[in-house]
Image (tube, rainbow, N blue to C red):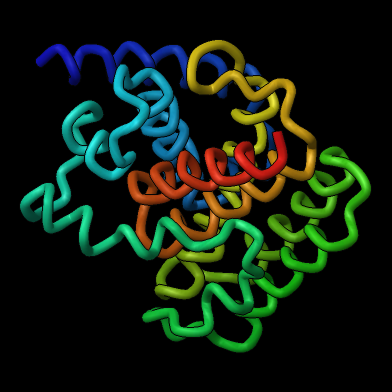
Length: 217
């Protein structure tokens, strides 16, 4: 009950914050709620007391996530997926995806890779992602697995980058992170959420941030 009450309080705070900064593209993306839910789990993980425990385990025990299986089995099933090197391109990461994307749907992930490879600032990357999201919203359907995944990816990418750009204090004290580290963490967040949901995506984000902070303090 305490966990649920805490999550509800966090949710209300984040919803109020999001309402103040809602953009046209956010209102048009049918998967917008995924990005909001992702940030809810992300904030909960940042508030966990034992940051040494697997974020997948904390997701269940601290944040009330229902994995539909034993926690131990859940951690084993997804540990390798969330522990992928955060510098891995989306083209490589999605090579064995269970989702059958059309060539056009898959092109969005390749173009995200291009933004990551060429952007000279987080602001530039955000501007290009906004253009891509607008294109996706205008041309993809949330009625297909691939369309839902791409649209959820862009919603999460926008919310995640906003979160990591503003986070401060505690485990989420990342204002000192290099901008491209925040960018990589946001991309990992987004693609894992698009494929597997906001809970697992937030766990992947937590691990990606830890890995990059270790190698690029």
